[in-house]
Length: 335
Ligand code: NAD
Image 1: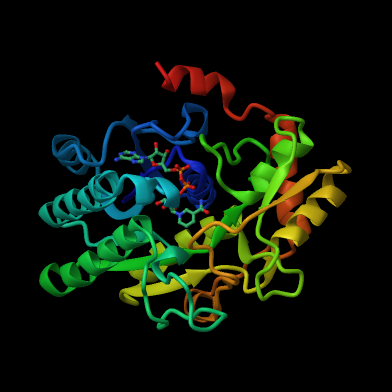
Image 2 (image 1 turned 180 degrees about the vertical axis):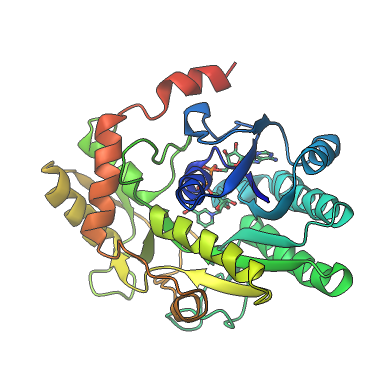
């Protein structure tokens, strides 16, 4: 049996494909390459196409014996989703609806879904637990919550089983150094800070230092991408063993402030990394930290890269060896 990975040429998808291959799984990748990279496609068969393409989904499910789907493909820029919400309902919600429909039609009953901490919005308490209220503060978070609900109803109606993994901030790169993070535009703090160390930007902006946190800057939970990848395989295994649907947070349970990230990056890179203080951005909660105890207990998940310094060091190794990311491939995909 094979696992279909949508978005398998993207950042987290490619790292998860690497993990699945290490576990001896047969993997099929579907990615439009609109945001992903050809060089990050680690398995064959690879279908370059859109999850919304119903004929293509039908072809894939007819040509292969798929027993589980890992659904990463999505647009995921919070700010862009506020500017253009319909794009997010189209690419995220419509994609998921078509994928679930094709799965039901072809009797594929297991899905692991990339959800996000953004489903919680401003938390009432930290660390955030899975039963905390969901009040997404952006169309991006809302579309992910809608898809979770679509899966809940599909379980009742069609017997489809799902695991929704709510990631906090993914960071770092594969320890072998062949794949890493290359988003365009880049919006994540760690790669942005490292771009300063590489001389690709002059300084890093800190959005507000007057939050109710020890150093005044926002605190976030960073989770190494390889640890996320491990959790995906465990989630498939959980479903295959008949343990049923569930929602899990994936974070490292330790929060780090923006200033701590910058200081650690200075230490790892040996670069001064100038920082500029600018006013707060709207909608940034002061502290977002996950409680991941449920994933550890029920999935047997053991994150291996919990220290911020290790996470930044692995990202730095990738950025040093690929200062322009998957540059060759970006040219190809921009045609
Ligand atoms: P990414 O942009 O690197 O990967 C997404 C991939 O999906 C890309 O390769 C893109 O080409 C592909 N894709 C998008 N829409 C598609 C479509 N309609 N058809 C086919 N392919 C399509 O993003 P990522 O950082 O790897 O994130 C993966 C998933 O994890 C996303 O669903 C995202 O919302 C979620 N997530 C990411 C983070 C994070 O910190 N990066 C945090 C929480 C949740």
